[in-house]
Image 1 (tube, rainbow, N blue to C red):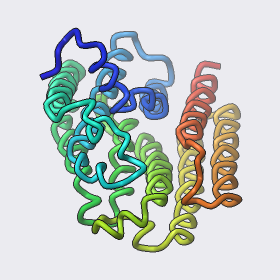
Image 2: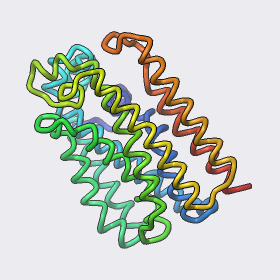
Image 3: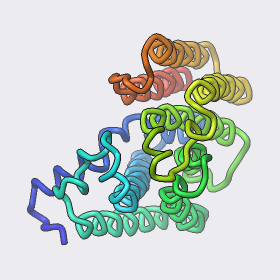
Image 4: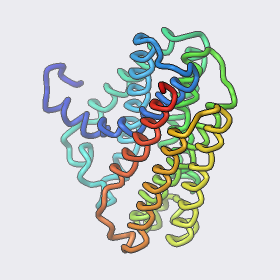
Length: 288
């Protein structure tokens, strides 16, 4: 088990689940919350939603690392992860899976009745997603679905119900997240074929997969625009949509002028810039 004061293990765990990447998932959860109330929420609600989202993502990432540990040993781009290298044990990862799940369920129970009812189903979906690449090429879309839960969940957290607006936002996140996951797996296409794994790139080839990604990213921007119109947001929000479009355009431009399989650029920064830009413009728009 994880020693409470083993700071090296704690650091490894934070690195393994890429805790820093919460920065591109949280803003969209906050968007659902802020658009729902057309204002900043109270501090208690904000903290509960933040902790719930971090725990849900931690549960998902740690489950994925444990479930994929044997696959990661075979793929060169993933052999430096902590479980394949022996820096963390399976017991370490099981501990963080159980801990984050229990905290997630507890926090959900403190928000409202509907979040408590839906939380176990969300957790089950997030857990089962990790097995999907073994059985179907739509695994990237299932990942998009997992991330798209966040804005609708935060809407439910502050209103106790679901409406059309968070569904537009969730659709935007679904398209955007599915796109970047497809891109992420393109570089592993040869290993997916070798070890019998599934992906969009393996099913359709690299060129067609990148076309699918462009369509998804354009669809994401369109969904953001529809959300803005439906929610009667004003100019600043739509400026955010335009800036988001150019961030995604530049991402695809970088891919276009490079050999995708040898591309070294980290797409984490594109994801962060995109989510923070649209979130910031949404906040400014609503508070003006």
